[in-house]
Amino acid sequence: MYKSRNIFAGPEGSSPNYDEEKVVSQILPDLLSMPDGRHISSFEEWFARKRPEIMKDYEQCIFGTSPLQAKVHCQKAGSEQVNTIKGIRAQRYDLYLSDRNIRLTQFVVFSPLNVKGPVPAFLGPNVLGNQSLTRLFPLPLSGAWTFPRPSLGIDDTGHATADSAGVHSARWPLEMIIQRGYAVVSFHNADFFPDKRDGRTESVQPLFDAYSDIPFTWGAIATWAWGMSKVLDCLKEVYSIDEKRVIATGHSRLGKASLWAAASDARFAGVIANESGEGGCAISRRKFGERISDIATHFPHWFTDEYQSFSDAEETMPVDAHCLISLLAPRPVYVASAEDDLWSDPMGEFTGLKEAAVVWKLAGKTDSEPVYRKMPRISTPLSGTLSYHIRSGGHDITPYDWEQFLTFADKFIK
Ligand code: GCU
Image (cartoon, rainbow, N blue to C red; front, side, top):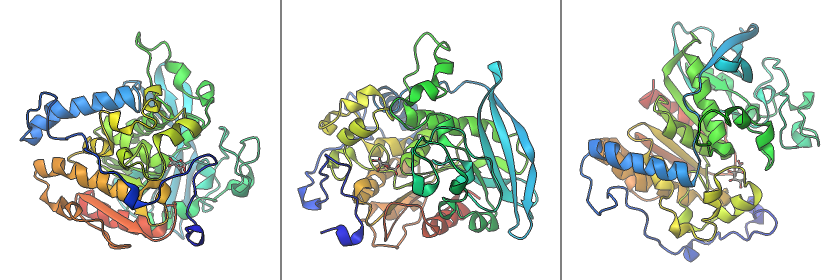
């Protein structure tokens, strides 16, 4: 029935529920009560007492712990390139783990050529390597293992080929973003953790095995999120960017990472989670589209082992997606869905945001009221400190999405 709309039927062996009528309503963990049942009535109290609890649950059960204190520094790589016609400047930076001078990644900064002074920025990892972001500048091919996708220029052995240059440029409409006065900062997620089940040995994680007596429990998603924080550490050295106005931005698995990056690092001024689905903004207890069991089967390296124990037992989780979103309060958050992306559960993503909104209300952010109402129609964005849209089409990040994110950033970040 969904064939004509190009709806993902799920990986082999899974049979996702795409029928809203089969969703059994569940009681969600209450964001405003303490374990002893006491009701929380002020944002200050929520922030001081409830938030740490939710954070602890997320660290223990879902994303794992990370070495957030690790010191890094960066160095310019190559010389600055400018595209005067498009008004964009590009500069690459190598990021090093300071105490051992080990290079962890190379991030690229695209900034507006004709704007004086530091500008706000969208910071988000990419899945195919920096070379995939644009054809406007020649960027070095990533050397990190990448999931083979020959049609996108990643060969069968996981190496990027010249054909991958600019293949994801539609996902990163640089001209549009730069013209609106923002910078874009990106790096290859695989530099931190190659996206495969045995990726740990090639990841940055072994570098931290001896860092503390208690081992870090981070999965791949938390490692990408950690990479976002470490790049943010370096942005104070990048004069074109105002590091106080950086928006954690991500699509899909990287949407999950951007949520966790901003939850763990209060310096992110806002968050954009595009079609982040299960393990992101979608309420797991709805059991709609992708399930925890699917992630446990296909991407066991993404989260902690404990997360997998909630397979087919979502209601036993101490938290759910609204709790993850609440960790971002009172900052601006944009959640976006796509009509045909049922695998990510658009209604679940909207519900995650809607249920989290009580915390923004407590914080006095009454402009988030639109998300209290029902799911909006297609291409009718709800705008507020908490913003949401669902567009037509499938799982992707498109210029339409970016148009909305830019309007949101103009209002709440700029
Ligand atoms: C798969 C996975 C999702 C993920 C998506 C993506 O579909 O099941 O959880 O969000 O890939 O990253 O595109």
